Image 1 (tube, rainbow, N blue to C red):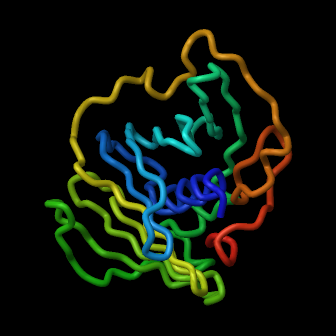
Image 2 (tube, one colour):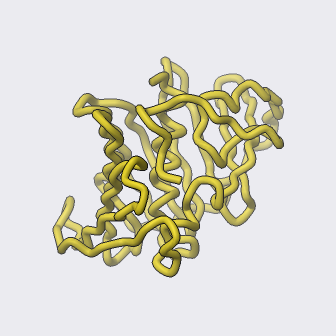
Length: 216
């Protein structure tokens, strides 16, 4: 999986588990592993339902900002002072399907309590009615009401996303906006390789990714 596709799948998995309405506000180190091997790492900031990820891909800094309420994803390229805006449709990503009050696709099951990186968590598994959609497990930090570790398994592939060194602190709204002086870049081809629900403009991408598609 190329770095861009890997980042998009990581983002999709987090959004699948994150609450639709949340008052969470924190910063953290972000770590991704694929099949037990280190993947991307970087910094994350969460404010309400918005999230910012600051990572390095192929030697270049990339910033990805998701704003579910506005229905968009922003990808910033600081070195070039350019950005792309992609449409975000949570209903197509499966976020609506795994809410507590929606059992069409399956349901959450509490499987215990666990302390993770000093945070008391409720450990939950999502049981998909269609078992071919894989397995999804999440650790919801009780004080944050937010998943700080997610594990998605599909076939022989396993992706883990986790937040470490979490700090509950104020996050400036400007962190989720495009800085002044950035030029918008339109690249329809970037839809390829992206999870369903995220695509530039009106052209959703249905690219290949981790074994099977992420849970729909």
